[in-house]
Image (cartoon, rainbow, N blue to C red; front, side, top):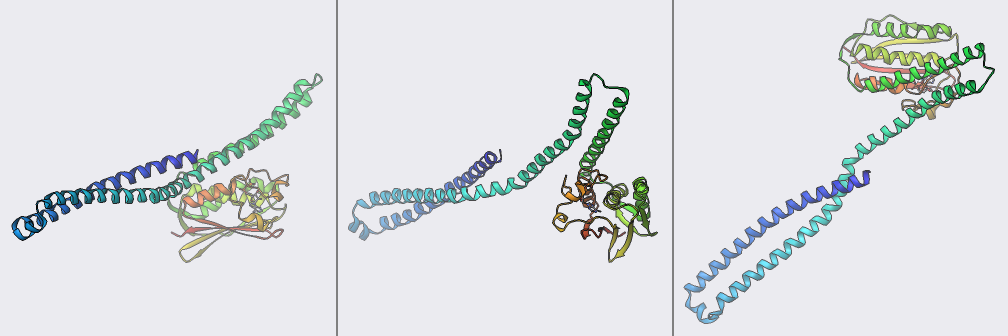
Length: 332
Ligand code: ADP
């Protein structure tokens, strides 16, 4: 698809180049032949005014002047055609590379979109396939009783919950392309919101959420920042052992405010660190953990929100010794 688009764009560029060449060549030809006409015309005048020349060259002079003129015109045309062909050949190669360069970002975006759609459909298919298989087995079983039906419904409900999480995450990813309104945001509201959102999962694992009070203010979109911090705190809880502590801190440094989430969890392998912000990426250690349900979309949502808030997320982690995610925000 992109090969033929590159060729079509190259042809278009070459056509533009050819029109420009034609325009300049025609004008150059006109100017040069006018100059020639004028030069040879002056010679003719001198010839007519000077009887010595007329005796020497005879009547052939006028004929030879016309021959000279048409010969010169022919040379100009040949030279112009040669130069034009050279420009079109060299320019054509240049146009091909220019077309490839022009289409490269579009191709990358297209490839990313295809990859994303394939990953999303794969993730959607897994719970659907599990539900379908369970229902089919149940329908084939003549002794299927009420108790088993209840078990089946509970299992289906679990799969439906996963699908809801996935569709919410996909929706968040799509929405976070739109920038929220950047206003003055009180960080205590953001921290309070994230703690409220993650309280139930922290309580379930008996994890202590530790946050010191702050009166720092930043420039950003309050709702987006709360969602971003919720992702980080939620991950800190998911990837920590029960009865540990997750610490939230806000500190001012120069014209930035650093908002950090530190856990005492499983940590991240150095090889995974550069990929955890990719869509659908999950480190093997987290896939194998039963209670850490997820689709590898949380951090890509967080990254998108950070970008629309002119913020940056950095991560430091040591396998088995916990992780620290820091969001660098614009101070108000
Ligand atoms: P999810 O948590 O749904 O898998 P995320 O995009 O939020 O997706 O995270 C991507 C991966 O990064 C996780 O699967 C996990 O391997 C790793 N990760 C993120 N946060 C932490 C953390 N606090 N501790 C350890 N690993 C983490």
